[in-house]
Length: 585
Image (cartoon, rainbow, N blue to C red; front, side):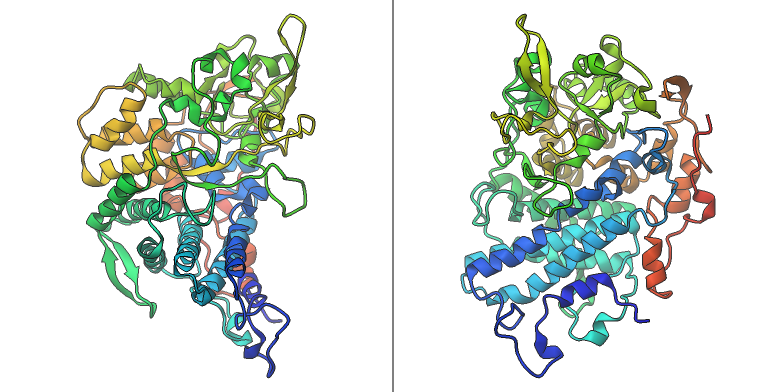
């Protein structure tokens, strides 16, 4: 039985017939006649973007979800049967195929990007061609970067299969050096060719990658590769597939300085207005933000360097769009009933993934007692009236919840005394935003884009790479904090505070070489399991031992290993000893 790799087969669906037949198709799109127009070219790249948010349909198996729950600042959480949440925190598993959907979705995107890169040279408009080619290169680099950080040793597919025999070969695992060299080459070329327009003046429109996003991603990739693998520079692959040359620290700094000077990105005045809870509808009944500017809507936010777009046209089982399922999964589990639901306003109900570690709350207060970002980022549920622990059998509950990516409600109706009578499950269901004021599914109505790279991250990466405090102090000044001198500790704290719950902490502690120690600091934290007070304890071999065994890489889907007939090898540390059973309490 022939083992045909799904991702290669998907690529063949877009390949012309000439490689296999004697005749050419003049009625179907193929690489001989497509793209013929500018609209065709845009459609081709739109097909790549269509895979970008597809993993959100299985959000619990994505890179971002794993990075958040595996980090030291969040626990796994969920209900007693949500073991797939808890295992991420403890670096264990219940299903060796859990990342299958993410693997397939990301390689599907790579396949489409390969097809776009191979054919966009047909576009006559040079400005449009360079923009679209840059976007395809950026997306391919982004997909590979998530895969290589999640799995380490992955197949590297750099082009479109030229014949059936080639498509039938399962590609071998490449070394991380080769994958990073390919990523670097894509980003370097994207930066070179993409038009240097301001972030909100692109020819492609809202949500598309820009030259500035490519520069920021290059810095993020550089920092992880050089830190995690203890290298001085980022390797660079030439057009023949050989590693030839490198991207140096100075080149990355230059790219960031270009982004800072020319992109038009800037910090918004009030940190609170970055997050949905400051929307104009919810804030009327949420005293904490009544003095804050309104939420800066997606597409209008100058801090959004790159986002994953989410849709207000989402529905189950369709491809018309995906709501932001992170907001549902990270929301507070059942709230302990309707009164609790209103008590925690404007934060809505969800699956209870990722309770915040109390150590983050306490260490933040000790290190930076006047930092307003702590309360802007974390909800101390236990400080509210009649907080209910153990709602719907919540596990690993600390009472602390993040406020950035969470279901956000708003008043739908008021009682005669001005109190809230009924709520929108998501404020975006209101006519004030994207909804009709009626349709309001608590699972599907979360229409907020997922921030992947914010401008403050650009500034902090610049400080880290240059060893200077200027840009870091710009970030601090925004929240009224005094300047500090540059130090490794100051920089690491600043990244932890500013970017909390935005998917960067896991990468940071891994590249800084502190992951094992940081994860172990979760031990002894006060938590509740099903409403019963206890403390966080090791599961399996324990935090430090599990990180040492895996280095933070997740298991390659077992079905892919089986399909490859020995071409793929499983990552270390994922044998039967890593099975998670339960808390057994």
